[in-house]
Image (cartoon, rainbow, N blue to C red; front, side):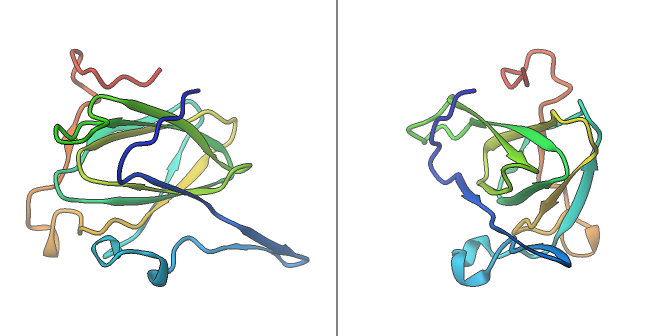
Length: 156
């Protein structure tokens, strides 16, 4: 597992507050986010064990992922920003049930994640751009790499 810092990528532990009723985790607070990172929508996805989502990137969208569990994910990021000092570098780390984290992924950072646990896993996302724009009438802000056999972005 390699850990390389990529400019603009922010990884933050999420604290779990537990008591006899269960638990609570704060995913984000607007007083801790820059104005350009404020979410405009949210969604939750469920990924089955062994499944990979991505790799893909966005042109203008920043993703704000929360990996909470109840499984573990291996997250892979590639810096595809030609003007970045980390251009071409890859970052791999884990998050989920035993390491709840939020991950901010800026535009042109290619991202993928794989459920490496044995249970279905949930991922929350709070992007700063509406999927397909207002009324879902605009082009989707994605560059997909998962079906390109010559892509340099491969999940190992």
